Length: 207
Image (cartoon, rainbow, N blue to C red; front, side):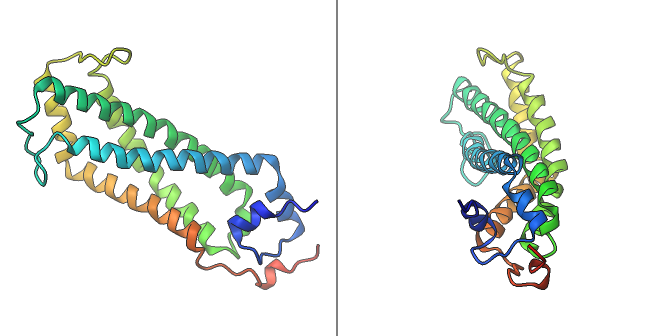
């Protein structure tokens, strides 16, 4: 029974595999790493978009001024929801990182003839330190809330100041934007598969 369809969907239907790389692609561990990367990546990207929408909802559109139509209690609840979503994106990014690094190691022999895989791997590695810094900032915000009840553990004005600093910091904003752009680029690379050479000489090794 031919077990290539899953690999052909990832690398292209015309790919001809050298025997050593066929074994690597067919290994259960490689498929598990790819599954972790895909599931973690979907939640990571989706959660990041949801956080952005929730976070900016406490401000007047187009500004970083508080929306006066919201009470302090409603604003705190919104910030807590933003913090909760940060937990989802943090853990999902960890799962995606484990899956991505594992898949990179297992498929490293295919980088030469599938440039989009190499480009995706480079972007993922560049995103990791940025995401690590973002996680530390998210954890800082976590410490101002009770993790079970969501009740604030500090004065509202202190939480508001920390939250506002998070959104007004140029460094954090640039890092978040670049990280999001890199993740979307990885998705685009997987969909378009540029620098894909299915008939290159290296793929015609003995079987």
